[in-house]
Image (cartoon, rainbow, N blue to C red; front, side, top):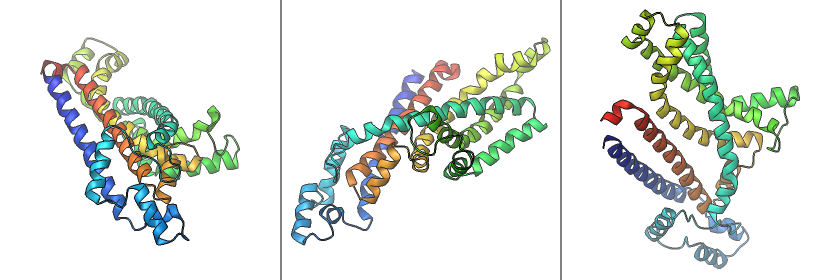
Length: 308
């Protein structure tokens, strides 16, 4: 029963989050100066032609009517059509999303592969040089902006050394630098949580009892402490995966990857309302669903919540 209640609460929070984001995006892009109808019609178009374009795009209606129409359509994932290409927005997003999702997923895997060993080593070797190096990685990784790291990696390994291609996504080599640039900051965040969680578990009585029985430190850590220490990390990892989706949009610009980032940037430049609205809501929905899944998974595998 406890898990069911938690799922219902998280589902309600998910729906409220997406609703609020949809509303904020709708209002925000309409208070930004500029007229998309003028952009579509052309700077040399007459006022009559601009009014005709406004009527065709539906932006001549009252804001209340536009909002109700937008909200009802977005519930069905119908974000309208692009002002410029006349393609369905959801089709444009789904064409680009696989690349962005792959970039985020590979970065997420790399972040875990870095964070868990470094965090565990720092917790086991507290107040030693290994702990200091782990904390140094965490501090530096969080301090360096992802886009700056991406530019530095590109200049060093692509321009100067020529080890990796500059742009594109055609081969595995194209993915190496974007994945490293995107994963570093998330790995740094996770290192701190893993270290803190493992440290807390190592101080509990069941670990002390295992040590008193003569179990090796390796068995105590990986057979007992780590399994419990990773439980609270699951929720944090889910949030970090959501951040990776947002970060991927920026990293794609640096490496010229044809994902959601380039689609959204061109839409912002052209004030393509449907693409901007649909893109933000879509990313917010994926972010919220990911967090929802992490919360539910944590509840399922955590005995304390199952017992309720």
